[in-house]
Amino acid sequence: MNMDFNYLQKEFLDQIQFLRNELADIKKNRDCDEMWDNSDLIRNWKISLRTLAEWRAERKIGYVQIGNKIWYPKEQRELFVKANLVKGGWKNIGEGESN
Image (cartoon, rainbow, N blue to C red; front, side, top):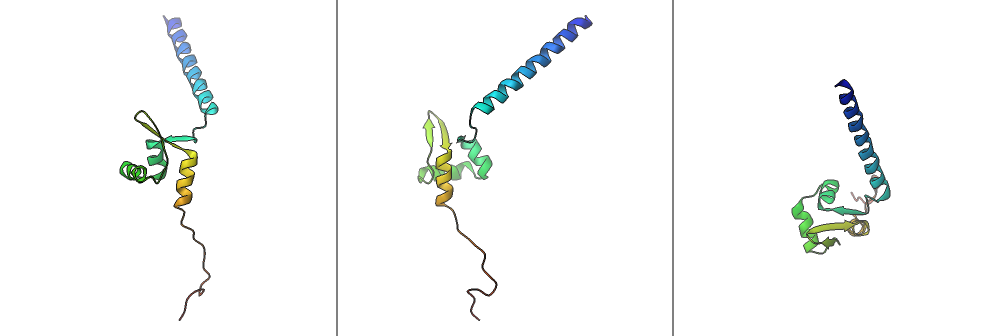
């Protein structure tokens, strides 16, 4: 009986290791940063689903829709960021001030 348990335990651990290796191969062979879905964009940019829907409706951000799934290619996210970049810089104290 004890041998059966040890055998099953080893089989179980072998299956877990196999699945971990498969997952690592999948992650290695695909560029996870290339395409984001709604949840990725919401999580990474800390925005609401409503905001994202408004940006799409206003054509502020490009996307790909396949069926009901919406994807945001890396290039479109970068274009959005560039289009909304607020340039800033440091001003020296007293510079541009008139007394």
